[in-house]
Image (tube, rainbow, N blue to C red; front, side, top):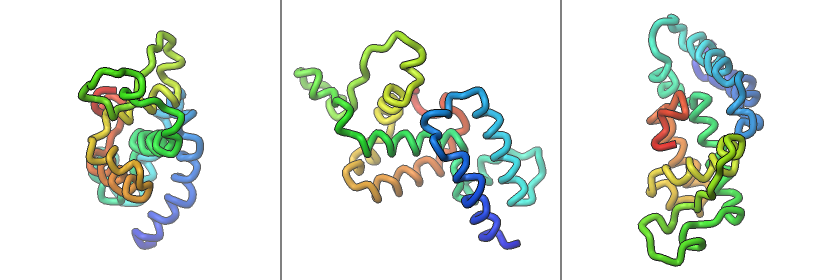
Length: 163
């Protein structure tokens, strides 16, 4: 089969399954296993051996690793529901440098800190301003975000800046 057919097959089956509800299940104990399966599929598509890193293969195929897909999905959630979040300028009356950032509420519970709302705020606030500035135009935002995530190809949340 051609590379285009294999890539389309990946998006039809594997991508649709792994992306469904990812913002809710990404912190489960199975996410590492899903990344391993995703790498296996990518290697099969490219007929690659098991030894080299898949990061370059992900970039060549324009496929986001599961962690990057999680970041993409949660940022779409945040920008789509921006009216549910407060900005720093709404909370703090003092003129601060990060007034356009979303307000990060105080949270002591680990379950809240790993939840969609809190994680979404933290991830959004560490996104480059050139991309957050496009959040008003959903298509431009998605395109810029996809390019950013494909370029960086994050394998883990620790690789994403300051989360």
